Image (cartoon, rainbow over all chains, first blue to last red; front, side, top):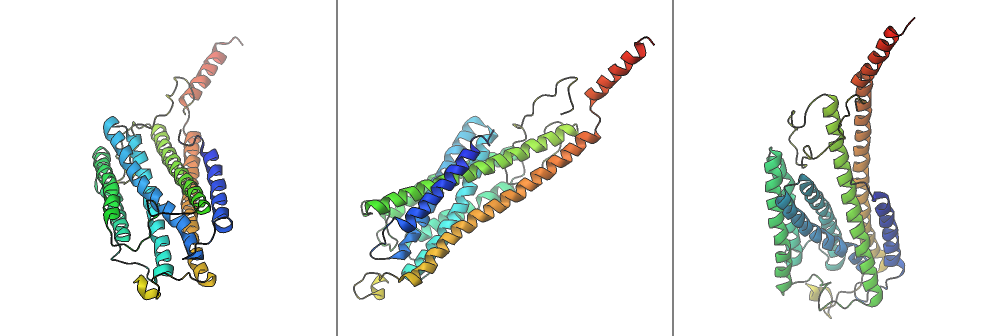
Length: 257
Length: 83
């Protein structure tokens, strides 16, 4: 179900990443102030944008889960937040590398953009422990959705608050002060599209893997002659798809599988 | 802090040999993240393959009821058939 279109998406991502890297190093001109160091911008900023959008998307998927009570929405929300967290790690590391080259420091605590992103990252870092702390799958998914919605609403609020702040060193990329030349803007948009495709591909891989595992577990239960929910699942932070994983009904007189 | 870096208040551009290692570092980070993810996916895939193998061996060990049924039918037919 989730594996449909995965091959096309993977190929598109690989092509987009190759084009993006080619444009970054061979097409985009060197920036006057920062020179070659500015090339980090093409990976750091898209990673940050996608991570923040992913957190918001996780909240929207959680709303859908609470509305429909369908565990598949919870699984999507979980996977999107999980992937956004990985992208946020990438943002923090690449940002620190840029800060070291540009400002001479790995981290500047007085900079609101950096600290606010760290707060968001730490907030979402508690998502998995929260899920793991709740044993009952139904309650776990409900509480996790409430968390995802609340934290998802916090992300744009935080972003606007930082924008309103005036004392910052961190360059503004999107806004009235951005004046990227055409070639740089195009390279930035291609990089953003490539990393967005990478995000979508990795999410799809994750969903496919989790769904396949759930189907295998259902198959094992069926072979063992158990009914769904007969054996308690071990404690896990991963959403349970036990009740929605359906295998084709065994025809009477048909083969055992 | 910026003013301390240069008398004009502007950040001087780092020379290529200095900036290169930072740029390489940032792109290597992205590459490593993707590589780690691919490695995790490979481990998961091998686990799924192992589980599938186990399930296959389970199906081979468990006599299928339908197969029994068909064999039983076949035996009955053989018994009822005239010599």
